[in-house]
Structures are given as structure tokens and as C-alpha cells.
Length: 255
View 1 (cartoon, rainbow, N blue to C red):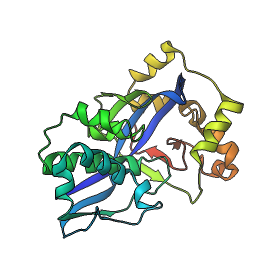
View 2 (view 1 turned 120 degrees about the vertical axis):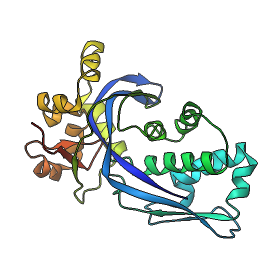
View 3 (view 1 turned 90 degrees about the horizontal axis):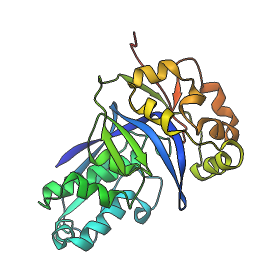
View 4 (view 1 turned 90 degrees about the vertical axis):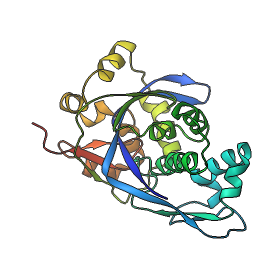
């Protein structure tokens, strides 16, 4: 079994408040159809869960392994299945780049396991599990082209709009999400009002980007730039910033 694992960009990303140790967000996630990893389940006798791929972290820190651990604990058939199948990931999405590559891999893996092992879990049930692994994972569970994402990432509502042609640029800059959120809290903290949030959530992605500048669209751009001054040279006209970076994106052929 083989499946594409798509990247995403944040058309806008605003902070709405705090919940325990998490920031609540208001965002539009859009799937990038021309940028994806490929995940395959391949027959092989395995002494333990086997994950092949060019990852920037140890296997036990990988989101796929975390998802496997949860599902195998709940369903013995999952543990049995991966005694005779390994997971191979062909990476194209840059890691730690604000494109959700690790979250997408995790969600795609979960959807594949749900089908292959006939777990019969609904998207909502899978999303509840996904939310315990990472804030972006629920969006990818639903396999939507465009969605409004709120809460701490667990509330995902499809937004119907035209499919966007997106170009992504990822400079070779390491953006540390923890440092960026710290700078946001220390130097840039603000919360979007419910009125402004509702306005953005009801606008098309194209109209949002026509109306907002790069710093207005993403609350994390300025703190990211504070932490990584070299980002500024990539913030050119009509380019926007995804997540906590370091990726920039633009929409092509906007009339």
C-alpha cells in the first residue's frame, strides 16, 4: 500500500489565547498538492516496528512511531501487521519548515493503518488520537484541501474554495519553534478578537492574502524574524510565511 503525504501552508495564523501550556490559534490550512512525501507499507519480516526514511530525528521521536505505539497498544492486529510489514517514507517535504511534514506523515500513516487493519475508526475518532501527538496532525487526518483550524489544532472545519496553485520556497534556515513562541510571548504578544477571527474564517484564502501583509497574516513572522534575521531577505512582494517557518509561499495566477 502506498499513499501520498501532502504538505500544508498556513494562509493566515493568528493567536487567540492560551490554554494550559498551549497557544490557541485561528488559522486556515491549505494542502499543497505539488509537494508531498510518499509512504509505503512493504512486506518484510520484522523483529520490531521498522521505519525507513531520511528523518532528522530518532525513530522513537518520529510522529509515525508515536502513532504506531498508540494504535498497537489499543489494537493487537496493528502490532501483528507490522511484524510482517515495514514502513518506508520517501521524503520531499523539508523538515522543521512550517509545512507540517511530520504531522502529515503521521496522519497519512494512521489513515493507512485504519484501512489495512480494518480498524473501522471514523475520521473524528482518528483525529482525537492524532491530537495527542501533535497540533497539526488532525488537519491531515481529514484529507481536506482547505480548512479552518482552531483551538489547539483539534477543531478542523472544511472551507470550500477553489484549489490553489501554491509555490513554496524553503531557505536553509533553522527556525526553532520554541524560541519563536518565546519571542512572541516576550515581545510580540497579541490576541485576535473574535470579530476579526470570524471575518478571516469566512474569507477566501485569495482575498485574505490580497488584504493582509506578511506580518499581518502570520503572528509568528515577526518573532521568527527576530530569531533569524536572515529571513527578511526572502519576504518579497506577494510571498507569505507558513507556520513558524522557515518556509515562504505564494499563490500563482491570482486575478
